[in-house]
Image (cartoon, rainbow, N blue to C red; front, side, top):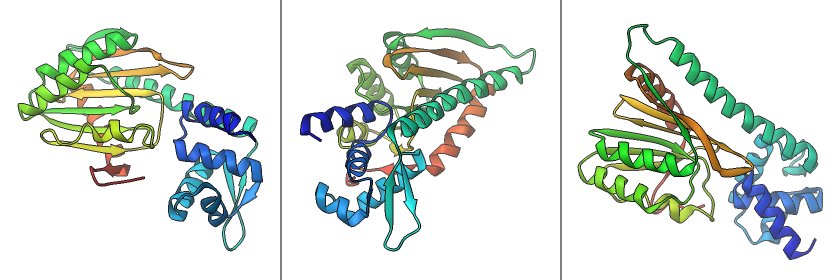
Amino acid sequence: MSRITSQVNYQLLVSIGLSEQEAEIYVELLDKQTARPKQLAHDLKLMRPSVYRSLLSLVDKGFALKLDASPAVFQAVAPKIAVTHFTNSTARKIFDARDMTLQALSLLEPRAHTAVELITGAKQWYQLYSQRTKLAKAEVLVISVGEQVEAKVRQAFREAASRGVKHRFIFHRYSKINEAILKGWLGTGDTQVRHFPDAGYHLVIWDTQELAIVASNPDNPSERSGMFIKSPSLATAMRSYFFTLWDQSLPVTPTSFL
């Protein structure tokens, strides 16, 4: 397989939710069909423990199988099967998040005042985040992809953090491609960042009073749609969901490395 072809394959795999290293290892494993972590680490010039972790993640995502052998041997799953399974699973998670939101809304007390505003497109999403974060008083909780954002989003974050507003971020992607982006959120006020592998949706909760949930189009991430909701009851329920994921996430620190 040529270097150019491999690079195109890496980019396509990363675009659907694999980390850069997972994509590189999967393409190499696909070329070999079966391989041991030691062999892959040697051929790709990577650390063996890091390769082993990525292989286990590929197994979890349906791109590889761990064979019954000692030392461990891994086998690549055919691309048509692996990619179809993974993208379908990602889509189901997005729909599950949507259904959970709608179910929580249906449980609100009849007299509760709930304001709902539709969100369409990345520009409106960034504008909403910036406006509401500038008004935050105590806490902003964020689940997002881990992408580069507009300057006004960073500015709103810094202004709120300088006023003592606590920020907690969970990012879906954490690879060499976006490592600097994730670590760039650290170092300002009471801010912590974690990584939980997932894809396709964004959730922000402001002061346990209001929230926004947005889904991205997997084929075009700039296409987004969702809802901004003013509801303390729903924000409280989604805050519990956030910290359930937080407890399962891995910390990202200035000194942590892939």
